[in-house]
Image (tube, rainbow, N blue to C red):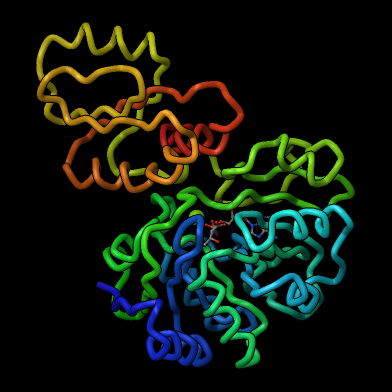
Length: 326
Ligand code: TXA
Ligand code: MG
């Protein structure tokens, strides 16, 4: 179990900053999910993230900064489209991929000549990043604080359960957004959506005033864009409302290993069931916690009702599709 510190307590915050400055790992809350942080300017500390997560070392990490000005220390240029995104959404759940300043945060960037930058809105993250900046750290490299391929953590307890005492966890309560940031590659002349988050395409396009392109085969490798990712231990099956209804009807016996996560479809009596909220933002906020909870009940199968086609559900639909692909 990793040790949990209180993110509201200035002394605990100071302990976290000291640990980071010494090259140790500190998990911290953001509004999306908890991140597993290290000093982005310390290659040895960054390598510890990859070791702790069991993540391949060529997967680039997002570097978290306290404000837009700090981005200039890590980027060789901030293209206009990235500037518009930063202005519209920072601090907030958007990551921009921009050209990397040579010689800076090489390990965090996983060998790419670009770098992912994000300024989180969570007050504990803000306080931590500001204190780290005062200590001279360029930023905090932080992937989601889960073991590679598993569901992202949205509480301090989720993080503590997966790591040992090499990791400190700053507790900042449950994450409000619940799914990871929207990632937009701004390094290729036209903006490309690498990972949908809580923002809709329309909101993003209104901010950048140009069309957002979809990821193609030439896009750089990114673990959050692997098909099978964000998976609980149980097998996830995503089904349309009709198919799910029929499947439940033809079940002729109780399946104790089966759980249901559905919005409109009702569970047969006795079946382990969580109701998916009607509101996309609420569903996103709970999604990973629900998958972890059902996993903890020991089921081997989770049947999930496909979310509605509405663009507000793009992020949730994306995470469910990946969980189902594992
Ligand atoms: O909400 C979030 O983004 C959370 C919190 C902690 O900030 N972080 C997060 O990090 O989800 P991670 O490492 O689990 O996912 C980051 C994604 C990965 O798919 C990574 O490959 C991609 O961002 N990425 C990072 N830097 C990149 C780069 N230079 N080019 C392309 N993809 C990049
Ligand atoms: Mg992740």
